[in-house]
Length: 410
Image (cartoon, rainbow, N blue to C red; front, side):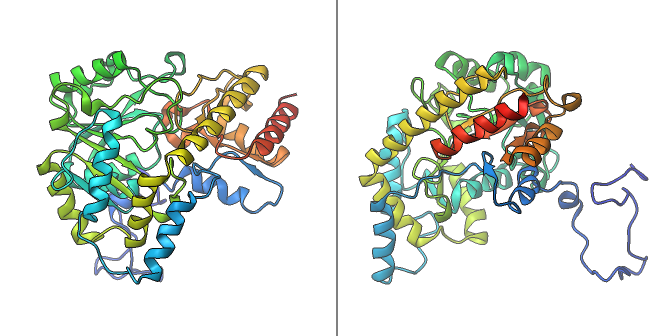
């Protein structure tokens, strides 16, 4: 690979430092290859431009526009007033783990709070822990694409090799066994599932999930199931791969409080799996994070105990926005698969974009009309020709953004 260009502008097999190891460019720090090979987030890079303008309507950030429910905020304040600012157990408080175990039964999941649940600093930490705990250098990790921006970097940071698995607009972004076979996932070590999906909003029905589970059993795949949007499912019930025969013992399920409870800044998630899986993840967690934020754990306990009506109210409002956005995009002639969960739409803009380039489309839309959406390629090559629109923003802003998009397209 000597002479090939690197993402950081250098070349593989060369170094900017002389042979004695002392750099001459004023810096003593050269990133490790696995870090240098990862590009900056396509979302952050794009929105740094948007944040410099006052007239922008942002349809790009994957964050609820609601505030955390009052019982959760009140519990956080109360915990601080009572001086509850010490570490908790590595795996999280016993009360919270038991509450989580009780909550996930609604998805057909059953986990022992003492040995099979780990509370983490956001679902993002849980994903990272899973990669570091179970991916050996050179292992292949299959990622259905388009995919959440953190998965591929996380795999690379763990020393693994990402394997993209194309899903298609024409299939409503569903993951099929044909797609898995075509990508060579039968030779992979790990499969990551994110349903409801970020960025497409796709969900999987029972038959689709059964078929993927059978593929995983046949080819002995470990599965990391990111179910952070499970409570934001609109048509039918959330389907979890871990509930399928023979899958619980080979699956780590990840969830959290950021999306459904609008608690993004409190940074609290959790992982569930067989005792040996949770023990391995806890080992990494205790040496890097020690324990999840104590204040957030008190807030989360209150959220599980007293905030079901708040979650349902937010879910209904997202559903109303979902139907509006899909209808308006269709009126404007943009093909869009109806999202079944999360709070994203993923319309195809290739037919109206300059040279079919969705990034150019998003850039011109931002410059001309002050509407910020994320180019689909931020989520991998599978997103080419699309943009991600988040409807986690107020209806008034959504209506104005759609009016501006209509003007832009005309």
